[in-house]
Amino acid sequence: MNSRRPGEQGNQTWPNRRRLISLAAVVALLVVSPQAALAQRPAVTAPGDIVVVGDAIPAPLTTTQPDAARGRAILLDRAKGNCLICHRLPVATEPFQGTIGPDLSGIGRRLTTSQIRLRLVDQSRLNAATLMPPLYRTAQLVRVDAHYRDKTVLSAIEIEDSVAYLASLKD
Amino acid sequence: MVQSGRTAAVLAFLMIGAAVFSANAQSPDRPASRPASPKHGTVFQSPATQALQADDGANPAMLWVGQGETLWSAPAGPENKSCATCHADGTQSMKGIAATYPKLDPKSGQLLNLESRINQCREQHMHAPAYTYESAQLLALTAYVTIQSRGMPRQVTVDGPAAAHFERGRAFYMTRQGQLNLACAQCHDDNVGEKLRGDTISQGQTLGWPGYRLEWQTMGSLHRRLRACSLGVRAEILPFGSPDYVALELYLAWRSKDLPLESPAVRR
Image (cartoon, rainbow over all chains, first blue to last red; front, side, top):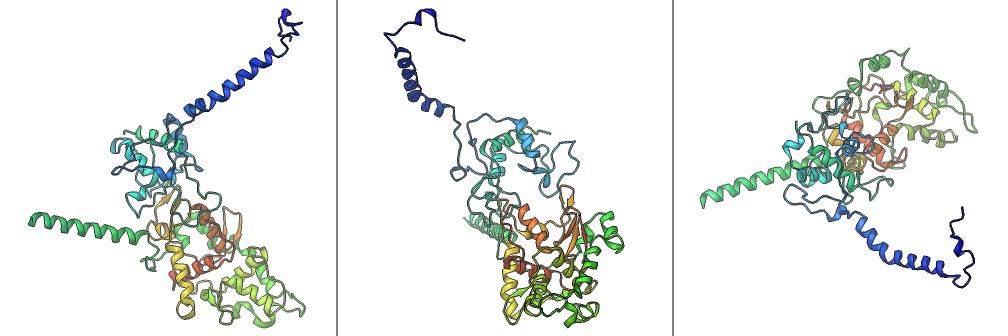
């Protein structure tokens, strides 16, 4: 319980020494931590700042490392990507798959990572008549329910996770 | 030079063609149109659901029709009037009526669907309180009045003073909306028969409403069904009886011109 060393017990001449050390530590943290936090917090590209090059978005939307397994879960989640409502994916455990969009099997062979990214972010930049919902866009949308207003369907890292999974579909 | 000029002309032609095509496929300016080969909503249901609808003894919606028949002659308001006081036998007087709604009310200039018309009757002629939209009573009376037009061709008026409402409904149908940015037409005109997960996309015909939806485990109005579509594309879910939904209802009714009513339907 008592972490004090016996010698410190009667040390009345420097009552504030430990307090001073604590203070110094706090000051040091205050000075250092914003920079540390900046270094750790991932940089995220806002929907309005996306740079399209040709038919692709070359730059990832976030500096966070994507995870294809997480992407697979996001795409299957009905409250997230909900891709199977319109598309087919090589997932044998999902019997009811949509037929509206293209079959996504082998999409990683047909398209580059950057091309897949644009198609998830906002396919209407390539085809104004597309049915594909813009998954990372908030502008120029009409009558959006208050619950979803000014929000993207997927977050930046969710897009990147999804891109990583789709890029891995080679057959 | 000649070669590049020709190439440029071909390119320009292609670009214009693409622009026209893409505008046509998603623009709010897309003209009103009816499906080339019209299909009732029932066609898109499973055989079991179709069988449930076909048998009045098994169709759960018939419970609401039965309640509606009782309400038809139930007195309300200070003068103890009922629907039957003025309209006598509903099975005769209401024949073909539902097939003509929504309809413009000449006095108020408002577009009324059957639900609003029933409530207008209660308030103005019976001096009784309006039923709440989607209440069991309003669903029951609407279902009772609608079944008197079962099998009769739909005929709504969309010209004259109704034209502005029709245009409002058309524009609503053609305009992309919601976080998912989809217009009604993109599914119900352009992708009929395709699969949304296990469900087949219908033509969005509205001949079966009010109807019993298995997902709800109860009877519901067309507006409840429209609200489910709004939710699906993450658009604003409008109030029951809102002018936009009534205008859309008129457009959809025009779209199913001459098709026989089939309410009360059973839907998945």
